[in-house]
Image (cartoon, rainbow, N blue to C red; front, top):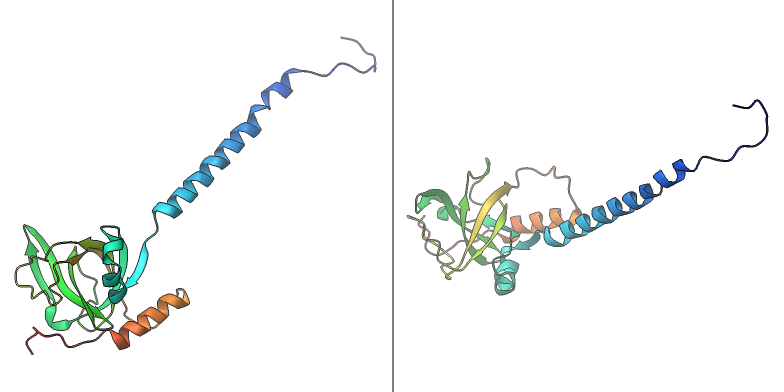
Length: 181
């Protein structure tokens, strides 16, 4: 060791160890962006009123989407499909009927005349639920596994969602043939 104040040569070991850090950060950012884009492209759940869903039925195929309509009160049946307990009912929007088979518990405030929003997909087969009148009776049904009910006017959501719920209250109710009073 010298006691001189003369400049000494720099250490070379540190600069090599830090060269990989920017590469790791760049790879992590790239992976995060790819995951985000993939999630946005494949995880989209489209929202259709019952009349729109019927018009787009062939294009939708068996893809998942969100369906909105108003249940026809006389069509609501708790029944079974095979050994599975289901709730079957018909929803309407703007005069178009859709038969629905919902798996799982219905929403707490579920009742005829109160708009519902359902997540599921089309099935090209009659509902085949014991005791269900199948008012649409068009060879298709909507298979649902998640249900939400409009229960008050305190929604905190985007404007388009609120407009659709308001429309469903005025356009959704119909009197369907096949219901007994």
